[in-house]
Length: 514
Image 1 (cartoon, rainbow, N blue to C red):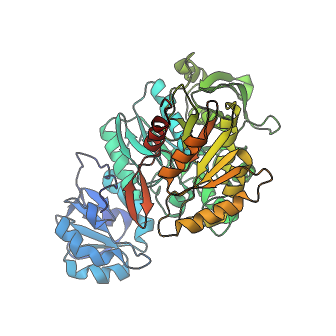
Image 2: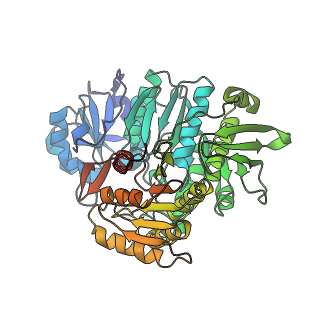
Image 3: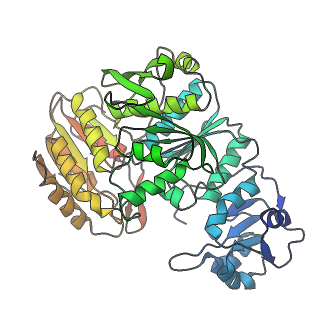
């Protein structure tokens, strides 16, 4: 396993469960003796097996996980769960085998059974959408802490258990990891959990076995069309979150055209919110003041109830995310007045790593590092940066390799439209040719009605220094893509790398404060 891949957080004091009970409770067939066999954990990966684990053999594109059953046994697994084809591969391991039709489809419910995550669960809040998921999850965590709760977080950037933090692997972990995380949170007396839920997580059973108290939808825009055939299929994946087996109540933003579609597809009660005064919604958000350090807004709901507060982030879209978080908490049972009292005059206290994060000092250009990697994210973030930039807006960006290539032209076009100087560079090329990726982004930039001054610079270490060399006092540099991440993926190798550190070093080299 790559040493830079973070560990799975598991309960420190797991309780053993007899596998006979699993077979009986789910009405499953088995091969081999189950007498005296007890499981304490679940995993899909032989590299992460701990003694007492149930190893789940899942069919893959090139191989079947069950063929590694002997390695699983040697690492401490006490049983295998797999399908009929996998059972033939796992027979010579000598481990008892639990049979299911689809190991991946069964993984969530089985993990919930092993870790007992359905017993006295915390308040569970889930957020999906193309953009804004991470920000909304962090804002939920911040508000819940101000309300006095011990809080857990699972996001693209990090996993939090109270004050414990680890870097994330996936936006939403595999179901076995998700339930292990929830069990660990229970040990730490976590009372509420904010979870970022991707479309892939919904399509690939990663949140199975979990019923969220409140689920929310931020927006939908061009992204992930490498995983989904078109926007309709992408929308259908998001709509799965609004099923009774996923959530009890929902909150839907109407700020993208797909919001109304989600409302129509929802099979659970939903309330709506909009930051657009022309869009009728049950909750409305109005921006009162925008500063380089915060955005002030008022949220008004049914019966004229309202809350006026601030979010420590720039951009109307960030205020909209904060409003969505507040309405989720109201739907979860918190009184709006109690939330307002907890926020006080200071407003929401939250730190969002790599989300329009300013890494510059009082002198020189303002430099922001951001995780945005879609055309819509570029549009919103560039508009927010432009509002507080008396000089020129310089943008540095690249695109992911081996990911949705259909959005690259639009990324280039939007980047050129919103900036004065554009520096096209590399991001995670993975197994693609980085020069070919850059060529497409440059081609997209040429489609813009407004043509930014264009520079193509590789690698990104040189690109940020080139951008700083072009900047003057009063200019802003937006480095979009890397955000909080501490690596670059080059031909399958995670190379240590920090955009924040590189940007600060570039500022120092050119004599600016950071």
